[in-house]
Image (tube, rainbow, N blue to C red; front, side, top):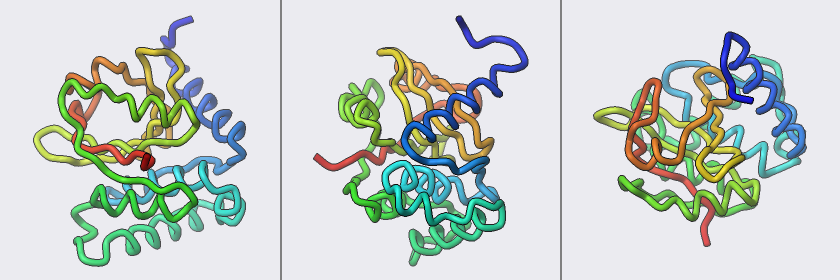
Length: 188
């Protein structure tokens, strides 16, 4: 059954929460707190998926999640200005602190995405930096339900979105930012 109609976003949100619970994480509603915390929010969700103790210790109130986003933002950006977002190296360092070493790499048009499919297939989330002319927003690939589709967490809405592999490879993602710039993937 295709996702159409007004409840599509609600079904995707519920599906994301189910995925989180299957993986042992229950964060409730997680959204970035401002226009600059998409990277830390992506890292927070990835860390919670990877590290059961971290997920259990999180203060899941909106205020607690906001404090954690800002703490992560400060930790990732010791030199880089926070108003410019979070660098790929910063997101990789934040996620790596939770038991699985991550690295960042550039995304190239037509990328095979083999490392991404393998990671997500092993339930290891992959962070994705997207934009138009310049990199602007972080997303988190959390599921690969079909060979031609990924499900991703968007911290601006707190919702799960679907993206086609071909659209991702050819810089035609929509809505919003069509082009991928970088990936944060597990090492190895």
